[in-house]
Picture: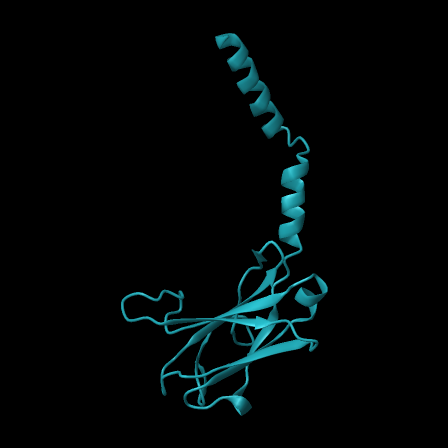
Length: 151
């Protein structure tokens, strides 16, 4: 019995190290690759006020890949931690027929810096990676509603 278990363990190690096809693993990896995140999360100065933050993002690819909605988070903390004085607002935006989906988040504190991120929600439910409000170089940035991007 002991030799049988040892033989089985050696065979399993060999199969894993030899990259043997695993249909379940491969299906999960293929599904994960199809979870396209939103692109180009953009601050909308025209529709923002000192207490409301308006943003939009390119939703075309996620919608084409079957996204059902978008999860939007706004935080005073760059790591989206809500403890010890940080605040986190979590909203859901249903997919629209527009290539750009948008949201206006109200009730914010004037002159406060906020960070924002968006993820696409797919059936399952499964979620894409986060797309962050960022500058032209791709660096995550904060925004003060009604004022603009914090440099």
